[in-house]
Length: 265
Image (cartoon, rainbow, N blue to C red; front, side, top):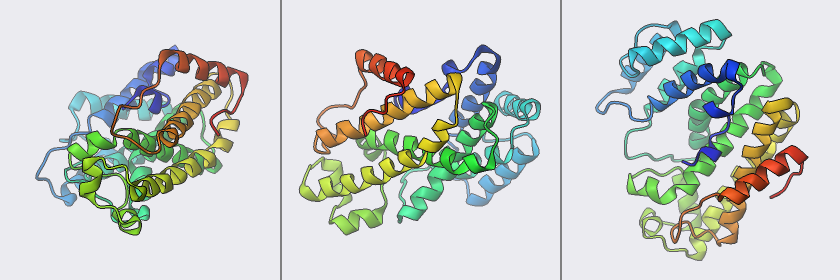
């Protein structure tokens, strides 16, 4: 996934917080390829150990210890580490989600838990902010997966609900073939509408931010909306060429973020 769709990456933090942010990202990245053949109860046991700050099998010792230390020093909730481990149980192929609710729950557990840690690290501790943080994380996660739809399908992964495919009369095989039919266009249009709604629901959270936090938020938020606009401009053809963000456009987004212009709505 392009880094522009992973807001608040390590390099975007001020020096005093950069290493702590890197630790949290390292913990997350170590969960992307969980061991195969493990039962759900194994992941549950690992998640309980993470919340308690105990040694793990799923994460290298040095990575886990660094994450525990960061949570302790920065007063971050270890239940967010727990939830990421629980969510990582789904990263065994094939990946499917039956309903929109199933997909939402996974995105909140996986991406939302990591986002909560980063938000706390950035000093955003209000309970009223959590829904905006969750929606922002869900929006970026689903945008990233949509931009990488073909790669995910090649790995037998699908981050669009099966119920949505049935409603639109789309088969998994037609998605794999990249047939940009009216049915597929309708499916992807509905999916992008839901993602746009998630971005919109996170806007109020962004308005509460200031300084470097606001600048980073707006740059990535605008980039996410740009990708959705580009998908629409291509008439939902996600197969003919990759979705990329050029250097000049990245600069334009940064200028827009500094100027406070919304753009790409």
